[in-house]
Each structure stands twice: as C-alpha cells, then as structure tokens.
Length: 169
Image 1 (cartoon, one colour):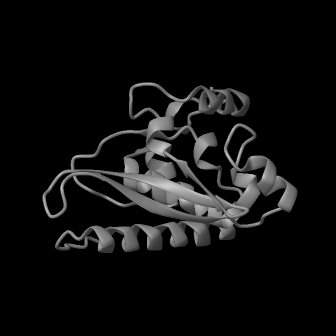
Image 2: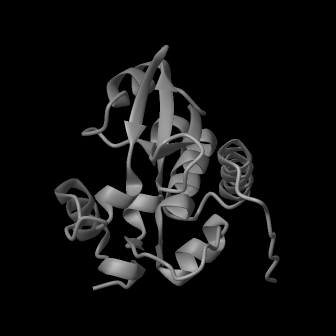
C-alpha cells in the first residue's frame, strides 16, 4: 500500500515524522526478529528522485534507500534490539553489552547546511545513547553515499554471504 502525505516542509515536523517511522520500524523488528540488521542485509545508499519514507520491510525488499529511510531503520533497530544491533567496532558497544541493553534510546537527527529560513541541503543521521553518552551513526555514509561501502559493513556482508542489495553470494 502506498500512502502519500503532502506537507508544507517544516524541519521539526519532518523530524517528528521520521522518528515516528523509527518507532514503527522498532515495532516491526520486535514482531519479526528474523529480519536482518540493516548493516547485515546488503542494503545500499541510493538517492531517490522523490522523497519516499519506507518502513523497514519495504526498505529491505527494495535493497536501497536514501538518508531518511536508512536513519529511521537504524534508529528502529537500536530501539528494538538494543545491544544486539551494535557490532564491536561501533561506539557504545562494550558498554551496551556490559549493561545487557535490550533497547537503546535512538532517534533520527536532521543535519542542515543552510541558513535559517532558507532552503538548503538536509541530511538524516541516527543518534543513540548508551550509558548517558550520545553517539552518532551515519548509515548513508556507511552504505555508500560517498562512493564506497564502509569496510566494517563489507566484512559483515562477507560473513553473511551477502552482496549489495541483500543478494546471497
């Protein structure tokens, strides 16, 4: 099902909606624990011609997404899976494991390169908190926004026998 919302753009409203999507993704991931983590799934970054904010099921089926969908998926899995969503090379991993966190406070954060009130460039990242300390994760950058996939993600894909877009090798 496709649902289209037409909104007058407002940064705060966009962030609220993306964080609602992150919470919906967490609900889906809790209900379907067999779904892979974002960095294990073979999903890649790709710009889209029109803004579409998919839930994690559609993102995984599509195999690619831009910054908004990737950040909402990553926030959702941290909310749903806690320490299990972090790997050993990510900030907060050791502390989250030590505390056995079943959920990690996470949200979509909108980064802006523009003057207040003027149109400009927007980018979504994920922010998460472990033991009182905030960390940032940029799924788009890790999944190819700058032309290369993060080496830690490539290692995960290799262990999973995956290639970009989730295909198995």
